[in-house]
Amino acid sequence: MTKPRVIYEPKPGSPLHADRAFYARLASATEGRTLVERFVVPRRTGRAWRVRAGQLVRIVAVEGPQVADLNVWNLANPRERFWASRTRQLHQAHLGTFDRLWSCLPYLRPMLTITADTVQYARDEDGAGCHDLLGTRCDPYVHKLLNGEEFDLCCHSNLVRAVAPFHLTEPDVHDVLNVFQVTGLTAEGRYFVKPSAARTGDFLEMFAEIDVLCAISVCPHGDLSVPVWGPNAADALATCHPLGVEIWQPAPALLAGWTSPRVSDYRGGHGLRAT
Ligand SMILES: [Zn+2]
Image (tube, rainbow, N blue to C red):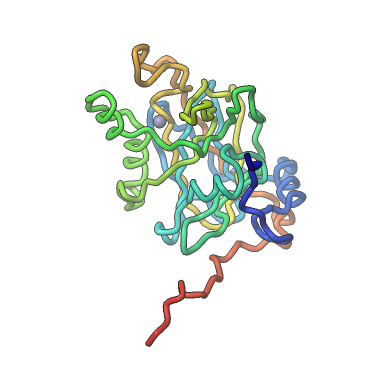
């Protein structure tokens, strides 16, 4: 049997790897920051908000363990949006500090870079990790598929409602980063979850590389400790908590030398030639 081989190997200097010293400084220099906005997203709801390039955004477990489903768009062009599957290949199936959230084709640039993660779950004995890119959002169509029920309490539906004030619609909602969600694959390769590892006060902090629109759903399944489907399925309301969002402006001196990344400069034209 051949050994596993990591396939996405960058050349030295590739923007795949963030400048760790730069982002570590941003994360540690909390005293010179200015709070731009802070709000709470109630349990089982969603909300969208703008973050400007050069700002930091935190998603905070303000009242206990809770999963958030995150979507991200270029604020000026919603066709450019977070590409979960490529990000999983470029970095890891569970994101951590210094990993980046990459945009879809034909743009392919970092939209956000993770500067801090207080959960620090690492990888457990079942191969599970936190901040999941293996799965995606819960949605009413899969509920109907699995148990025949009409069920509106879903992250997909929360995100659809959250982006409506920004003139986005259901097809704009895309595959997510499951913040605070612990997942893995069984030995047979099946997706599993464990209860969220977040505790009150935990946060995931990200640096906005470009102007973005972010949206989260505060998952109606709470911390995912109650089975959603199967014989032990039950209402997870008692495990649902709100989430906080904070937007911070770092001290200007910390951004010296940083420039907002450009879209990919691939110009090959896919081999198409004018005749
Ligand atoms: Zn959900």
